Image 1 (cartoon, rainbow, N blue to C red):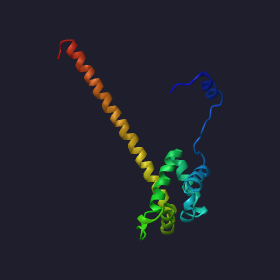
Image 2 (tube, rainbow, N blue to C red):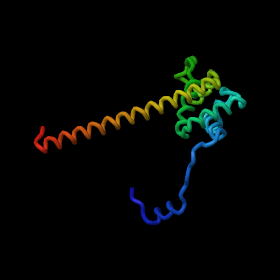
Image 3 (cartoon, rainbow, N blue to C red):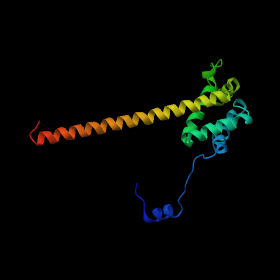
Image 4 (cartoon, helix red, strand yellow):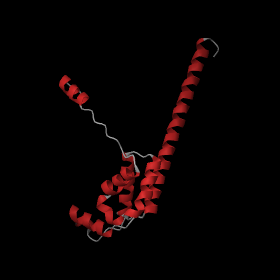
Length: 154
């Protein structure tokens, strides 16, 4: 993308820093009040949210990770049998029918989603590290083979 000097100047003069959630309250606000706001009646009562916020903060998850967890919770809430005539309904009718049939998700289940996401992230990070290590070992092996061949030893 091409940027003229005026655009570059404006971007450098007014940089924006978007911090993600940091405190337990930040995580609760993001998950409960922003991402799951339309399902408020079907998520745990306010008294149960500090434990969820603490687990999220302890995990140090990003806002994007919290959004992914919210997506899983939302999908679980809406995992219901199709009402009669579902495919003939308008979008608004479908949304209302799904809201009516949606099932509550408790704090323990939300904590399971958090723990599942943490395990998934950790396993992905470890797999990436192992793959990077294996690639580096292969690069070194090829380099040593090439050196040996260049010196007439192979």
